[in-house]
Length: 153
Image (cartoon, rainbow, N blue to C red; front, side, top):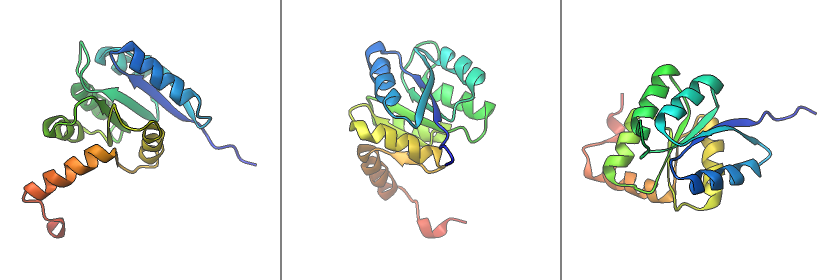
């Protein structure tokens, strides 16, 4: 029987309690292996270069290098990097900045526990993932814009 490989993850958040909570949640899942954690954007970039994880979970507001800048840098280092943005905030600007920088997912920190592991699996498989709150915001943004899905070339 072939064993399913573990999904390797790096966590970045400047709040110790949230980072530790994510670590505990993710290490309970046998399909996920947390390679390391960072408390600021510069540490995140160093760990990203060192470990080349399958998935990065990163806060957007961190010291030394903010999450959006870190996302841009990781995507430059490894085009197609699979990054999920985590934030307390889901303002239009925060969401669009993270997605434009290259994040494949966006989760607000008050999302349900299961959404985090679901997001990891979805993004690992190459699909975008947006928590329920963010999905609703994106629908409203598209409705307010000139976006027309029939005009995509």
